Length: 260
Image (cartoon, rainbow, N blue to C red; front, top):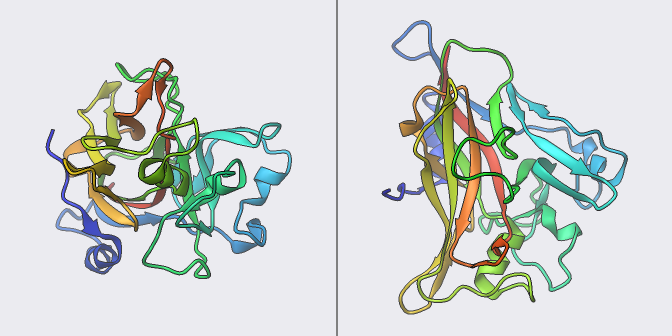
């Protein structure tokens, strides 16, 4: 599968904004489904307050889309998506659990707060078929005649980026020559899964030089076509007896889609 060409996030917003309107088909529209969440729902550190309180499990509803999530407040852990406003370009060795909420965005200062979603893929779910309940599922909140994702806006989680670039103790090793970590984006229509769009989150070249996604990037997913929903999984060359060792976090800022 060919890797998708990366487009700078801020250039993409300017480009895509011109198309956030009706297109040639009078019954269809193109829109950007962003992640705009009231800042009062976050604490002073930019962490979603629900994480610090009793939090019911269930999907998030944000601007016309639903996002899967499963929260365990006892262990301050989750799968699926959780809101955040934490920009953090490097974690310490004692990263758990507070620093799991960070996004790598080297185009912005840590003081420039905005909301986004941290995704955490449950690596125990099946990868050979459609999971019964995909841990990182995104779907329209209401039934549509058609829903065609065009771009999703993605960056690295601080934890995942640091694990690849430097390693994280005994959890995961520093990437070496030939290592790569990918985000896989699937579409599902009538219980049939598309081939995934592959997006490289980080890799090392033949000289061992690491390069990772360090700002919001528009990922072209038009080849998924008309879908009922999409879901995310990950792969990494750093694997062990129990599967993937690279932390399975990524960050999501929004989606552009054609719909009617």
